Structures are given as structure tokens and as C-alpha cells.
Length: 416
Image (cartoon, rainbow, N blue to C red):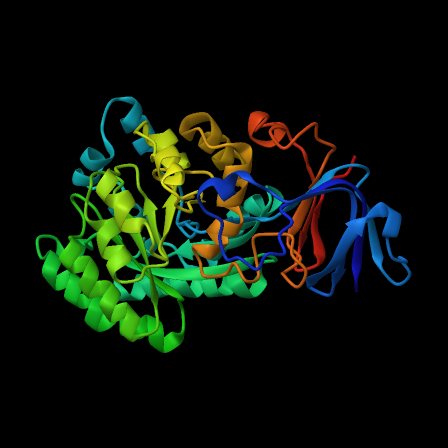
């Protein structure tokens, strides 16, 4: 059934330019239409305009926005939502002064999550993950990438990816899957990292591809994890099996992850807490999207990515949540945009573009997601009336989302 939204105070994120991302100074511009209506045709946006020329609502499901604002759904291009349990003990370790690397060396971190996941059934993993999916849907996310990487054995990596496939088949939002077998070295290969890399390339990637379980391949290319040479080997192998690269890069140090990502045409390089002029220059003119995860920097108490320098250098940048149990236990993309403004000095318009169109581009999906555009997927949410766009990141904990629409259907409705 068609859906008509009327009496929209302001429709935000309108873009009929056909562009796949927005960069540099243009990131501070967002298309808006006041006193608006929007019509869907099945799952996609059919048309919109001002209330003075609203079409007949006969045969349509009608939502009265009552002056509320309409935004394109957030696109979260970096998450680790499929995991078992939680890691609040490591949270206490951080409070007591241990670093992320120190916790990992003690057997915590990623390996801790791998141990728990190994002992958890697919059904239980799915149940826990769907709770997180329901959470992010109500907070405005309509397209999400989910990584494996808490398995670190062939069987457990496939288990995670099968859970992601099940989420994709049952959840109301759009889901994309990433194989991240190179998140850390599995316990069985401790001290034999090169052999583990061979295992990822020779066994894991072919098995993932055979079942069609992922679109992307990722590597944690950073100090204490995988080298540039190992990263190149893994993503080259992934490319032979049709998997596009998305790289964890420069979280803990200037690792070479940005450069190897650009060299191999990665869709995105993510984290970027450690960035210099050389890395910004490497990204200039490339099709690789620099993706920042300020929720991780916030939780770990480390430096934030230099968003202002990257935008001022003319780059497009994206934002994502990094939702995971150890370093960013939240998928609230609105809070991510608030951190972008508060800690990285991005304007509200820049943060919105980074969390919608550009984050969709970081998944190769901005033709269909990330803006209010005729023909794009009807993924949007409606808020209470707002005084301005800046109110969104400013009042980041105020509950303002009233209705969530995904693929043209109402999936979340706040009563009252």
C-alpha cells in the first residue's frame, strides 16, 4: 500500500543531484523542504512537495506528521552486532587504567568475545542480535553493515555470518555482511600469525564465498594486529572471490592501513583516530571513504579522528557507530552525530550527511539509500516538531523520534 506523510514541518536530506556522496564544503549543505508531504510507492519514495500541492490521499495509508520533521534513516556502515554476552569487566579494567592493547595481551578483548561466541548457539546469537537490531531501528537506523570477527575459527566465523543472513531475512532494515576473520589471530594459531593469515585466505574466504555469506572482506590493519603485507594478501584474496575491501585502519597508530586500502580500492577505511597529512593526501582523489567511529574514541578515552582537517582538505567523510561489546557498546547514530559536532567540530549538516549519504556510500549503497530522493528506498523517520537542525545533535538524549518507516512500512510508532 502507498504511504502518504502530510504536514511535515521540514523534510531534511532532499537530494535529486544523483551524487553518490558529498565532500568538502558541500558537506555543510543539506536540502530541505518546509511544510511538506511525501508519498511512497510500495517500498520506494515516489514524490514529495509542499502542502499546497498535496495529491489525493485516496487508497493511501496516511501519517500526519503534525509539524514534525522528516529525516532519511541513518546508514551505519561499521558494526559488530552479532556477539555473545557483554564485556563490562573490561570496562572496569579500563576505569582502573588498563589500555585496550593491555587488555588484549591479557587474553581479553576480541579473544574474550570469541571464547563466549564459541559456546553460544546460533539461535541464542540471533536472539541477542535481534534485540540490538530492534534497538537501532527505533533510534533511526535503516541500513546497517554487520561484521563477523568474533569467531576466529572457520566454523565460528561461518556461524556468525549465518546469523547475519538470518537477520537479513527477518529484520525490517536493510543488512549487509562483512567477513572479518582477520580481526585477531585465533587462539589455536597463537604465535603463528602467518599461518593464520594463510588459513583466512585458503580456507575461510573460499568457504564464505561458497555460501554467499558476505559482500565485503575486512582486516584489522593496526599496531599489534595485522601488517600491511598481510592485509594486502587477505583483501587481494577476497577480491578474487568477489568481496570488496573495508579496512580497520589507524585506530592505535599510523599503520599503513589507509594507504593499502586506497591502493586496493577499498570501499572504506575505518577508525582513523591516528591520521597525518600523508594519509589525508592518500585519500584525496580516491574512491575510498574515510569513516570515523567517534563512539569508540569516546568510550576508550582516546583522541578523535581529525574530521575538520579532512573536510577542509576537500574529502568526503562518513560516520558509523562501531557497535560492539568492547569499545563502543552503543548503536545510537544520533549520539554519534552529536560526538561529531561536540568533539570533532563538524556542523550539524556535515554530521547528518556523514551519517546518511556518505555512510551509505561506504557500503556502495548510496544509489538506493541515504537521502530523500525520488526512487530511493523509503527509509526515513519522523520526529516531534524541532526548532532547528542543530537541535538534533544538541539535545542528543531527548526522545524526539515518533515514527520509523523502513521500505515504505511503519515499523516503529511512539504512542502519545
